[in-house]
Image (tube, rainbow, N blue to C red; front, side, top):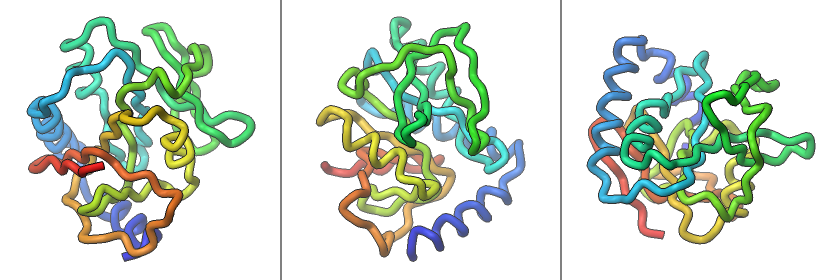
Amino acid sequence: MTKDQLRLKSKEKRAGINAKQKDRLEDLMLIQFQKLAIDIPPVIMTYAPIERLHEYDPILTERFCLFRNPFITFAFPLITAGNLMQAIAVKEDTIFEKNDFGIDEPINGVPLDTGEIDMIFVPLLAFDELGHRVGYGKGYYDKFLKMCKPGVLKIGFHFFEAEKAIDDINEYDMPLNICITPFKTYTFIK
């Protein structure tokens, strides 16, 4: 399937998940994340979910990471005036506002250099067995991930299992290292 076909398919499938089902799936995904044999690094970039699109909410995973590493710094994406994505370090008193896409962004945090980020929770609509992902089609994450240091751990979360393949992957697409689903964790060799 193409990216456009998978976007449509995934949005329809996610729309069919009610709040109780979503909570259960997110609990199962936290358990999968807890099973990973990784150290929780000092800087993690995460994201605010698009609630109207039933997007995976990484808050439980963030809390677990904070429990394992109380000195962690979380960063959230901010789309700049130049249509690039920037990582903004946040604290408890950071103020968020919705951008033009309806996504909460930090407006008073501290910008981070991409080289400071150790792990990134990457939102997605679909992924395949090779770790390629389908986002919302604007390319913000792919451009951002290209600027990150080698070895940054890119983790996706998805309510459904991997697609066999995404037909229209190109050289600009940045694959994941790991994708967590409620019943399976996919690890991709990169």
